[in-house]
Length: 403
Image 1 (cartoon, rainbow, N blue to C red):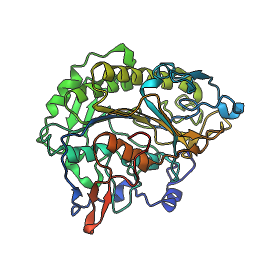
Image 2 (cartoon, helix red, strand yellow):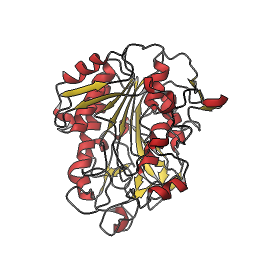
Image 3 (cartoon, rainbow, N blue to C red):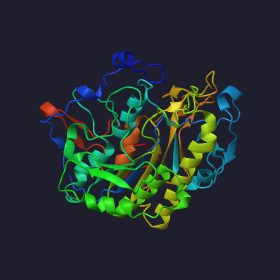
């Protein structure tokens, strides 16, 4: 039986929650999709998915006064915002902290496995056998298709996420909205995003050549880092400039057999640990995010583009026996900026251990509503399901202090 690294087995997980496996996730042909409204004012979004679940304590929410088995190996450093500290792993972001909002009180109560978190943070909901809810990008594509019939609206770079532990829906697709609102899928050689092998979509009328040309002709900037993630962030900016409304960048395409945010310190050459945060993972993110933020601002695109960076959950406040951190959905941090959102803000806080929200708890539905609202999409707008059932795009109001 395949197990997630949290120790939850597949059978245990399916008993715990209503989420379905991918094979049973049904497309409902009788579903009517989303109620159409004026889509001309929809803003762009670049969604950086920090696959694996970054440790909040070792990035955006350090606990310098906690015991050593909680605070971990990294020092807290000052940021551009007085009184706000990041871990020393993110010096470039610390120097730009006045330009984005940190949400420090994200949490969810579902099973602490990758797939649940990926669903919640990419759709705002847990899916069921009857309904696989659509990714934000697919919702955007459904609404934007009224005005942008020939231009693709939703692209994923450098590719979709593969296996993360349990073979089930991960929230990265169109779900019951149908194939025409799936993301454009790009396959390229591992060492160079520009070397495109294949680019496909179910809608043959879309102008995929524009995407191929935009990505293939990039001249990569060293400020983004010499990494596939850095290349993808730069490509995301170029695609937004060319008219794509929603671009997801998956920082990693799996949590197996490569170093990622999933820092259990299991042992072995490709098992992630906190030293990898210091030497590889955090520098990779620090460089790419900072360069992307700078370029959005310089190009005058920040007001019209929402930039999101978030993982599917956080990490345990206590170090495990190997010096790593395990899955923890009790609290974690995410970043939001652009599209009129304030810079230099901190939403919520975690408790002294970094294990639970202390104030202003933010669940995935609130995060989803904030994304929609910032993009100019009404989060109360209805999704029409089968048999006359309808639900709002998000099950909550947005974070009050942001939009």
